[in-house]
Amino acid sequence: NAGVELTYRSPATGEIVEVNPELADEESLVNNSPETDGWLFRMRVDFPSELESLMEEDEYEFYEDGEDDEEEVDDDAEY
Image 1 (cartoon, one colour):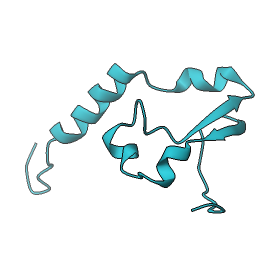
Image 2 (cartoon, helix red, strand yellow):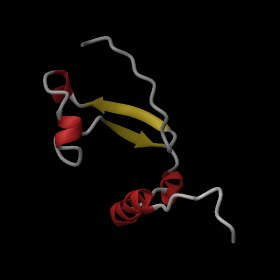
Image 3 (spheres, rainbow, N blue to C red):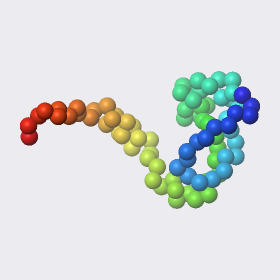
Image 4 (tube, rainbow, N blue to C red):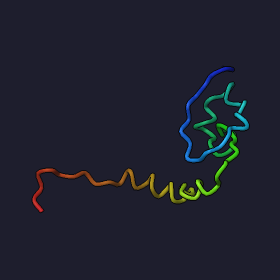
């Protein structure tokens, strides 16, 4: 869909320099191949130091796994 405008909240300041044209015909690439063919856009980052706070892949996987392991809190329990 040419002319579609999206708002994206980015962790870095910069300019989008390329949008993935393959997504126009095959939107499922975003979920099925996010690290190779399903990229959204390429960005020129103005301040590379803003990227230092982002998680590495292994940190994200640990964080994501921890989300499932959170214990439910029993509000009626005595401690």
